[in-house]
Amino acid sequence: MSLPPDLKSQFPLLSQTINGHEIVYLDSAASSQKPLVVIEAMNNYYRTINANVHRGAYEIAAQATESMEQARVRVARFIGAPSPNEIVFTKNATESFNLIARSWGGKNLGPNDAVLISDMEHHANIVPWQILAAEKGFELRWIPLTPDGHLDLSQLDQLLDGVKMVSITAMSNVLGTLNPVREIADQAHSLGALIAVDGSQFVPHLPTDVQELGADLLCFTGHKMCGPTGVGVLWGRSELLEAMPPFLGGGEMILDVRRDGFTPNELPHKFEAGTPPIAEIIGLGAAVDFLESLDMNNVRQHEIELTDYALRVLNERYGDEVTVHGPINASERGGVLSIQYQDVHPHDLSQVLDQRGICVRAGHHCAKPLMRELGLVATARASLYVYNDTDDIDALVESLEPAGELFAR
Amino acid sequence: MPGLEDLYKEIILDHYRNPRHRGELACPPAHKTEGFNPLCGDEVSLTFELQSNVVRELLVIGQGCSISQASASMMSAAVQGKSVAEVRDLTRRFKAMMSIHETSIDPQVAPSEHEATFELGDLEALKGVVKFPVRIKCATLSWNTLLTGLDDLQV
Image 1 (tube, one colour):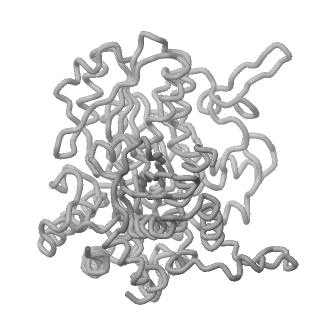
Image 2 (cartoon, chains in turn green, yellow):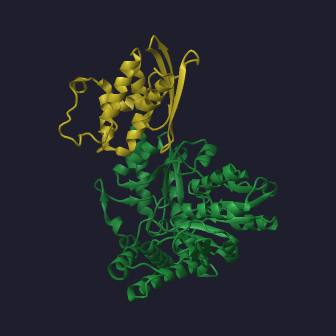
Image 3 (cartoon, helix red, strand yellow):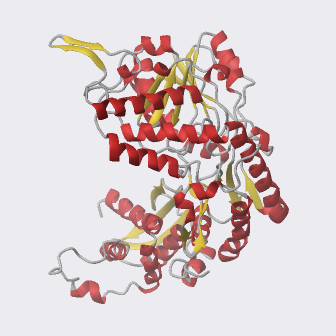
């Protein structure tokens, strides 16, 4: 089994030319492109059933509600969640982490506690904890890295001492490293800690089952998995979410409001204040359908093969002139390639690539503590998804040499 | 490379490959000011010595893309021996050149005669950066850093 060969044709944006070149989109770790079915699903909502949800008794309001709740069911199934009521729609993974920190952390963390994160976290899983730590006085602790770009778990037991929450990424957005979430979860649980997982880079690319992962909470975002921007997900175990106080207050998240207070709504609505991004949620449901139609095992296999090809071709052509950060084995990593070529600055490299229609991200990738650990200020990152093929890799590889010539010192 | 000539002019690449006035002065008597571009991680550290409000010497260390480092090098060459007032004036003009809002919203406001005749010299080569808006911050980093340093000294 493999992915359909004409997949690119299902993504309207990818038929464009940029600077006279066919677009080569290699920035899916930042945001993926959207297949026509997702764009159409959102379009259809606005054209035929646009109405607010969970309110009106009229036909289109009922259809809008039904479509949105269907999307919740699909997302739940997609990540192996036992119940759709455990799926909370947020704005993005960042908001999901802020929700966890504010709601769970606000209630459960104090001066003698610790939260354990890692050196390869995205700012979304760092800053919400830092903000809260400044208020509550708990310790924020970091799992260090091994030289080959894995988490160094040799001291995990000591690191877990006094920890109430472990919050780590399942896959690094800079190194591509796939982390042993299950192993960490088991150890955390045995010492009485909970574990929240950043699935932003994992869920779009690998088959996900929250129960197999052993996670208590999982955050991810819609726009990196063929869905639209503006919708993210927080999954949590029912009893955990039940025990957490509301995050944002307002409409929808209440059962009753009186002068002397309010009664929060049931899950998941307790955490969904205000009118939700209805079209986006429906679009995310369509994205999940699309990915399921491809089979996530095929998606993973495709990315292993393409990553392996990229690592091989880069090495054959450029040898030591090119460095790809992170694990060298494609089976231990996702399709995220942070590249250093000669001493060309990533920003200059991406500019030259742009001239050839190649889209890569240059910068610190919202992971500044990691960049400091690596001794880098920035990398040029090429990241892969279902629509990429070996032609895209070849275009990237071809373009490094002229960039090197232009900036040779 | 076709399409990139406006950005990567030969003089810019020359400053990038052979940066002028690299190094660090002892502080004190020199003053130090540092700037960062959070977007791409460019860093610049300037040390400069003032004598009767004239920049006696300014040295640069830093790392970053060709535009940020070339701009710092060109700036270091441009400000040596200039009075603080002249440096501030030059900075203002350079930043005006780097503004993407080139044409005023109000057609009545014409550029002053002084500005129209002002010579930016080699710095003109950086004008092409305006066509690549995400790179403007790279070009203005060292200038903003120097401005902060002067402001801190209240000169």
